[in-house]
Image (tube, rainbow, N blue to C red):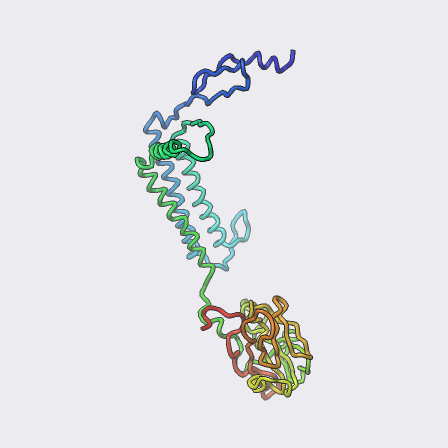
Length: 350
């Protein structure tokens, strides 16, 4: 006798379900139906239901407090502070508190909703036969009726404490995202309009870190410079060099076509911003026969013999020029800042 036959012999003749007795032995693959519904303690004892209501409300309140803590963390902890927290080691208290508070805010909303559904909402399982994709008017009416019944069974209208605390938790959580918008700032104000270049600032070779002299710049060469006093160890080096990086080229004075460029140069030595006016990439490709420089990112091309005007590519305006001269010691120096903001256009540029 096979094991399958033994299993079938041991099957009960009938099985009690919520829909009555269902034959099993005659057809082992018959739909057994849903098990009989067993009421929960909250369904029988109003005091237990009230305890569950208070537990759900308590979790929603904890979510609100965590959201308030998330917002307070932005005010309390500085961005650059590092502390030791066991067992995580040295971490940023700002990042740690933001992750912890936001995690608790979302967790307690979810936990409160789950506890609400498992203890207070109706847990009666409902089976429905498959129907056509297009709903009939009767089905639509039934759906609306079921929705109304579900809303009534959820006790949202009667359990005002749950309803109010849930609305409070859901209303406060989006504030976390609003606070995160702070990382888009601060506003640049007028910082993009000026650089470290000023009258008397020496031009320092970025490779040798020595002041540049006219004899150091030969015809056809390309040299990169930065302002005197700026060092790579400075905490704001990257933000400052992104505006002040300079491109030095020596051109025969007779080859300079632009009048202002010739006046702002020194013996054919011209100084232009190294930052492309398209999206701010550094320019580094120079063709000495044509005096053209090429941005490697999107191939914007500028003519350094004609005011660094755009002759090809997506850049919107010429490279800003820096007026230069020579001081009493024979070093190249700036005679002011750039004639216009460096880099790509921005909405406040005017």
